[in-house]
Image 1: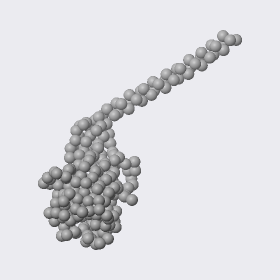
Image 2: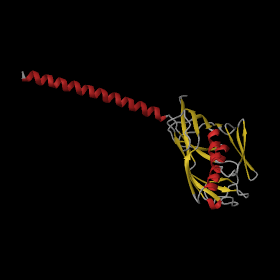
Image 3: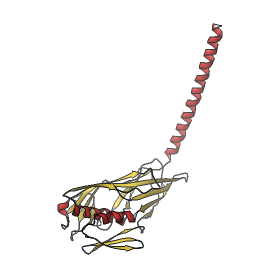
Amino acid sequence: MTEVINTLNWDAVSSVVSILGFIAVLLTLAEMKSQRTHSYKPLLALKKPYIVIQNNPQGVPFKWKNKSDEISNDGELWVDIELTNIGFGTANEIEILWKIDADKMSMQIDSENEIAMFKKTVMPEGFFYTYKGFGFSIDRESTDTKQELGHLVSGSCMNIRLPMSVKDYLSFLCLAKAKNEQPNVNETGIVPLLIETKCLDISGKEIRQTIQLKYDLIVKKYIVDKPNGNFVFGRLYFINSRKPNKLITTK
């Protein structure tokens, strides 16, 4: 009887070992498949680590640069951010779409415009403001909110332009807060927009990502309206969003 029981026990153990071995093989095959998939999958990332916003000669905060002692010739017009492919595969037919919530951007600027420093005009395509004879707009769509690019191999990068509406929103939101707050305002939040990236991997499969833009800025009140003064210092963060169908706004 003992021999029969021992035989049955060994048969049970052998069966369990076989099942565990089979599961291990399946897990190994799944891991190999995952590695093969990731070996040609691209992954796009946006980066603009540091920003300094400088007043122009009229005292309007409109020049963007990378550090305080930098002299930028084109910062008054355009701001470049870095697009990098941090994945293993080449990204083909890249598209970047900035889905701007112009109404909420305008609402946030208006909520800080207590002393009516900005004059506002509502237009079908968005909102137009003037300050000290200088005009800026918050547009729902413009030529720089959709950017179509070529390809980007693994580890390489290229510069793309920050939409002018985003630049103006951050610049003049900081100005409005500085007019209302105590010296050196620490301003953090999420820009009311979503950035959607799309590209094709080497097999032609479409890869999509949704990215949020966060900011952490220090606004120097005593530089307000001073010609050529460095007015804002801080960082921008581009973070993958888990809610691709919902705009997330600042508190």
